[in-house]
Image (cartoon, rainbow, N blue to C red; front, side):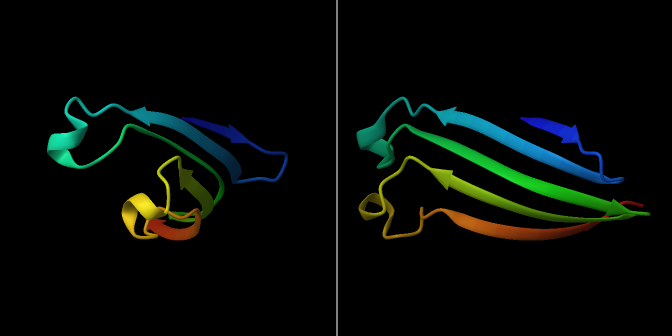
Length: 79
């Protein structure tokens, strides 16, 4: 996971890459898989707005189309 500031004040680029190993795939019904994401976060005062693209290497058929690539947004407030 990495987060890098940009020339735009309070805007950061973030990215992550991971891999999940599952010891007994047949027992748990899940494959080993990779996941990755890339996004932007903008902070103003105590509020952060984020938007990111995320995906996995799991096939759509394997998880009933719930593992499709997605764009997600988030809002967080720091106290």
